Every structure is written in C-alpha cells, then in structure tokens.
Image (tube, rainbow, N blue to C red; front, side, top):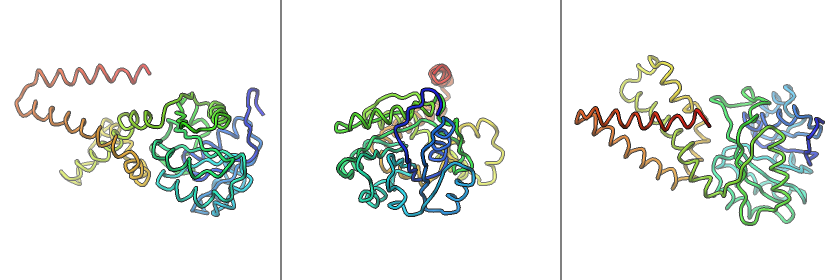
Length: 290
C-alpha cells in the first residue's frame, strides 16, 4: 500500500459500477488498496466487463447478498433509486458499516437515507465534483477525482468517526474535501450545476423545434454549451425531482435574464446589450481563475 494510504476498510461494495462508481474503484486500486471490491448492479454484462477490466474483484445482481460483510457501501446510482435500494439491503448490513453516496443532491437524501440506517450503521453524504460527458464503465478513469473537489455534507446526527473515515477516503483518491450543510449544498449546486444541465437540455430542444435538420451545423461553441446534455436523462430527472424548489428558483432567474435580453434586442438597445454581455464576460473569468 502506498505511503500515506490509510483506508480503514477491507471490503467495499459499490452499487452502480459506471463512470463514478467504476472510477472510484479504479482510484482505490491505483492508490494501493488491497481489500476486496464488490460491484453491484442490475446489468450482469456490465459487471462482468468491470471484473474483466480489473475494476472490481467480484460482483452480484443481488444487492443484499453483495453487501454482506462490507465495511463500506457506496451508492453510485441515480438518487431516485437510493431509498428503494437501502430498504432492500438494510437488513444485511453489518454493524459498524458506513454507507455513503456520490449524489448531486443532498438535503432530501440525508433526510430520507439517514433514518433508514440500522443500529450501528452510519450514513455520510458526499458529492464528488467530477464527471465526463459519457457514462458507463468504459468511461471510468483512475484519475477522475484527482484534484477535484468533493463536498461532504454531514447532518446534525452524522457519526463523527464515520465522517472522518469518509473524508480520509476521498482525500486518498485525490480529492480536495470541503464541508457544506445539505441545504447549503443544494442551494449552491442548483445554480452552478443543476441549472446549466437543465438549460443545456432546453437549448438543444429549442434548436430542434426550430428545425430538426440544422443541429449538425453547430460548431465548437454549441458543442461546448450543450456537452452536458449528453448526461444520463434518468439521473437528471431524479436530481430535478429531489431539488425542485431550488432549481425552480434558478430557472426563474434565468427566465428573467432571457426576457431582459429579449427586450433589449426588440428595442435595439445595443449599448445596454453590450453592457450585459460585458458583465457576463467579466464574471465568467472567475471560472478561469478557480
């Protein structure tokens, strides 16, 4: 095991061996983790592929069976599946185990999943800010989390020892960890992540409604703006459902901004329009220096 590697787990079960779950397993192995990693999922062919690639050590489509004796259970499926899955495995969890996740919403997850933990089992919410425009085990990378932020979202009742283990775990796979309350997380990421995804889907659909034969004429600018519309639709449907209030708030702000721009163009107020564009350009520089 590499110097500085301190992972207090011997058996890790990953539910959802796709881009994030697969990358997590690969990152652990790259860092010298010698324990067992069990992959769990609905599609056996995907799990077989993951084992052949050396991403996982064994697999099962029976979640309750696969998590037996696991010290850590990672939920890496769309957030809408969490509650059903946890209810199906809670009776098989061993005392002392930790359940964590990689979901993009947190308040509803902490509220729903925390109380489902059996005695002696603890839940710690986490959200690695990492991803790609593709999904599935073929897109997984051992370096996906390197220098990426991982937001840890403890609730009021989160076990401190379990929390510390999860923080160390994410640091060991290369992430920079920081803490937010679940509510603060959802408010922030509704604006900086969820809104852009919804806007990207909407932009593509708007173009298609104009003429469904012109999208292929789009260049790099359109590709850059809509890359995230390649993200799994099931995943983002669930995120919108779980963070509805905050996303609606950001969508109303976007609608207001578009209405303002529309008005400026209608009235040929090019000076004010340029001012709006300049303001956005200057603000955009923040991302370049982050």
